[in-house]
Image (tube, rainbow, N blue to C red; front, side, top):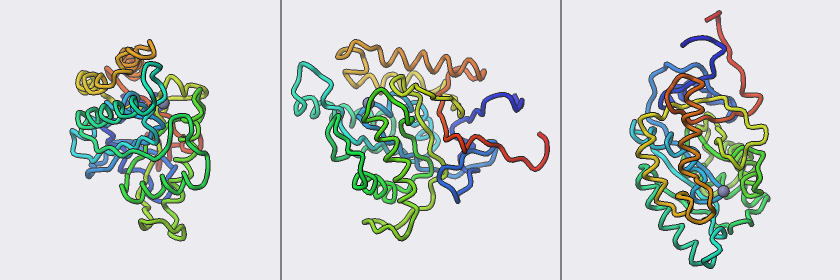
Length: 267
Ligand SMILES: [Zn+2]
């Protein structure tokens, strides 16, 4: 469908390479340009956040030859009333490694504690240096409004870190990286306030394998917090996909100033 009133739908992130490389938060142009392999960096507050919300897209990217890297700022180790944070953190680390392997992703762990991600400059510099090290083409993270303060803080940290990663005058361990073409915000039930889907990525062919992958997290199976995460995000993919006539899809928000299309002539 080519109606300009349809939400932008991207098959396997095909439009990503058409984004202006000059502005990290400028966003997608219409899809269709052949693309080289990309690096996708998904940055979440807790192990599990990015895999549940964006994992099917990450798997699709891996399948087409992209490099996929997950950065969990914390293990999310505080969420199990039956285990100490140390014990549950060890479990989450193993689960995160298994899930990443199943999605074809590398995984990095940040130095922070669940519930205690600091909203400070040092955290921004830490994430900026990871961005410089990984050299992503596209960054996924949390939407800015959230029930969970770790999510909202992570969103703010990542947004600023992308800018710091670009600036050569900011001294970090790795040199400046100017290749981030877009920051896309994940569709998370905890981050729903003012979340407006903008980019839709078809994931019909990845849903089954994604379900198997994320089910390696005990919490995702609903066994800890009595929330059916895997079923919820499967249903959400069906809902998002239905409205764009694409089977199942994962939606992302973008910054308000990125919601623009620039055409040389009428489509
Ligand atoms: Zn979380």
